[in-house]
Length: 344
Ligand code: TXA
Ligand code: MG
Image 1 (cartoon, rainbow, N blue to C red):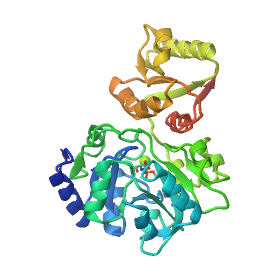
Image 2: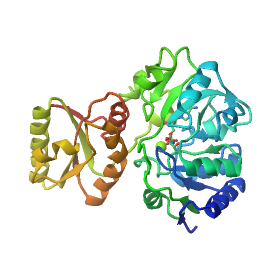
Image 3: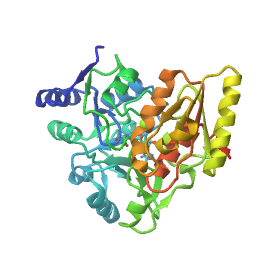
């Protein structure tokens, strides 16, 4: 299959909509990351997503809609969910709600709930409106790789597996949406993302971060969100997160770096821009500014991909403050590091 990257002209969007109507796949930009879409109501089309990504069939998809009204067709929307849609849609918030029978089992891996989200990106919204369908779309990466934040990232992962990639430039947020489970007694964040716990708590009471969101699962424990169980975001090199006070972190990073180089391995540091001066003379990839953590969120996945290109075998990353969007950054970093954390 030939894969084409197209600017999102009216013509390209009509072509993309036709591909979706005909049961095909299209990769498209959202404000979070690029998605790999198919008609959410067409089981055969949705199966193609799992094949193209190499995604385990037990990992449910997010269904993208053009409006809150369109979500009502797919699931039972509670009063609290409606408040959240009004506050944060379009935007990086995915809600888990009780599924209606129209949604085929492949889309949500046979669970009782279905994930719905209205993306805040003009190209995604035009595409959803043009096809008039709910569009199931996971991140458009090969399973296990960092999510794509440019059309080229999608090409690198899915060349020959999807006919059309709509190019909307770099994604604004850079990390995936917040996944909020609305089916329990209190709303639970299964995956932290662009809408922070603080923002959610200002609209509905009792929002909590699921206990399993930030740590590895114990053996035999089930993940509330299946996607959090599989290895994720991992660069090819071995990533270690270093946490602690700045001076101790610096000393530990320099020690681990030297040990790697002495062992003949190529090392690289991932640090916030403010920290570059302390590592002059080292291989460093800057991550954005810790004073504006959204710049770190924006840069993170591209940086993890760049690690593969530079061939770094040992990657040392300074932890960031886990408040606000920093919680989502740390969630992705811990997984990318397979929970290898050094306390300096
Ligand atoms: O920002 C995003 O959310 C991007 C863009 C394309 O919208 N999409 C995305 O999809 O990140 P994906 O498939 O890579 O991640 C969806 C996450 C997975 O962790 C999945 O397990 C979880 O949401 N999820 C989806 N439906 C679920 C359900 N019914 N119950 C529990 N977890 C669910
Ligand atoms: Mg994903």
